[in-house]
Image 1 (cartoon, one colour):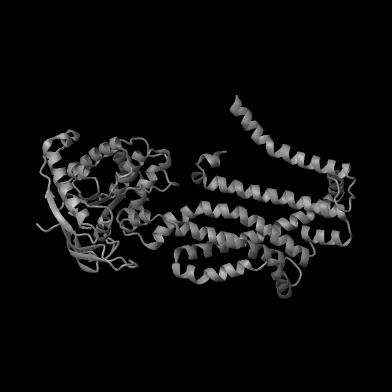
Image 2 (tube, rainbow over the protein chains, first blue to last red):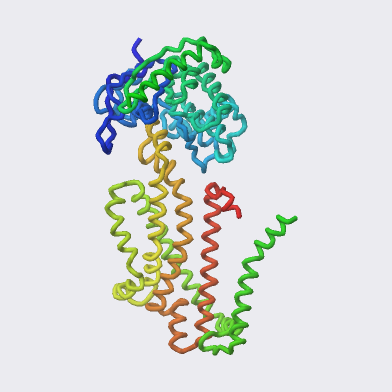
Length: 263
Length: 259
């Protein structure tokens, strides 16, 4: 079975990069359909660049990127994205924020006006799934940081994307809220089986959520290790205190430490 | 209870301070025996306002018209140019020096040119009001558009949104607080513009009334006209501020704005 996201030998240099040094170099990542992949690495290693490349927001200088059987030459349109900053539009209610992707992506864009009720119901259902039932009429700035981040996840998923890209989505949250959101994203993934690429610097987060973890070196970023996480699913937060879990985290920690020293 | 008293005080404060200002003025004029030619007392000005009230009303009405017409032009033109500047870096880089240079010209200097072009009439006040007030609108709208968060842009672009989609869905709503904020500045400037032009190149309007009063050494009428200008200015500013509050309540959610 071919990979759903196939990043092959990719080198990327940002236009306007001062030293002309590539952000990522000779990078190869293959993610299967429905898989939960995590990319970890020291800060500034080009983790976010991978996201931009895979969604067609940037194009590589060298190498090929294939998503869902198609070479990426334009923004991919099948991806949902969430960032550390929830970036909700403050003039729209939470529900209307959720509907934003539907105003852009076809075929929803065409159907939105005539099927508004149906889409609103879908948004409400999604909000209920992340524990925000009935909060849709509030403005995002009336919600707490954790609630905004949940709403941002809903927005990323509202158009039922086949690929979900998460760029340190829980980075700005406190530890308890973060673990709560791990559970939410775990359940959403289990229920809908979309493909996820999670970029994070939190090793516990990567190991808890992912099927496979890729470790990146310092800039220019390349993959230095790939670790299959064979912990049984569904995983409970208790698993993070088992020896096996701790061993995996420790092992990954070793790779990152080496990468940092090499830099 | 204390909170309620603070609120009442806050509502009354502008009235009390304004009244106090005039009372102090009256006292100073009387205590130092200042000649009404130099500085008339508020009571004298009030007298003269009453005496000339039909003229004042007629001319104020005309000035308001000129201002609003120029302001309206500035809003339309400023919005369009601001959007072009905010949406395109080339337009921004290309036109900005021109705009800044143009804005640096004192608009009084433009009035004679307008008179040569259009003669004495409604055109110089309307156009001066327009020329003097469009700049802040352009700059603010452009800023609002140009400062879209890169993440928001990424989210939408990854969905296949066109540049136009992003401007319509995010850029324009986002620029609205900047736009309405700039209207408060623009309306006051437009007002200054129309009065300057009326003073120099019109047969009607408060500016013209002042020009004639000053030629006749009718100091109380001159001051009455000034007060009329101030009142009209406050009304127009307040109307714009009210519109701003209505349209962009979402942007005024901080504690500062609530005060």
